[in-house]
Image (cartoon, rainbow, N blue to C red):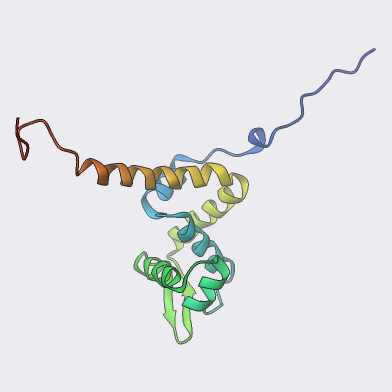
Amino acid sequence: MRAARQAPLSFAAMRQPITDELRRFILTSVPSVPYLEAMLLLRGEPQAAWDTPVLARRLYVPPARAAELLQQLAEAGFITPVMQGWHWQPPAEAAQRVDELAAAYSDNLLGVTKLIHSREDRRARQFADAFRLRKDGRGTED
């Protein structure tokens, strides 16, 4: 008797889908992949005092970009200032959502990054559309 051949499992088959709630969180709260990476770094070491030079080195970004990321995270309420820098200290509900995001990113890196980039692409399209000339008579000559 011949053994039945089983198709090898693909990585795509093992990935968990991104829930609607997490999709909404990503689209409304995660402006870029470096922002996500910064969130996950700070989340991973919540007692560490994060400052611009340390974050810049860990993310391989210029210090100005690291400072911008820290400012964005502070404005979003994910981090709080301490004497030596910043600590990860989001509200409980946000922390839970970031935990879900960390798991999804670990399991489905491509899906999460595509979703973040789709947000960035949409903003770029909206910006470009704002400069398109309309044929409705406003601001153009016929």
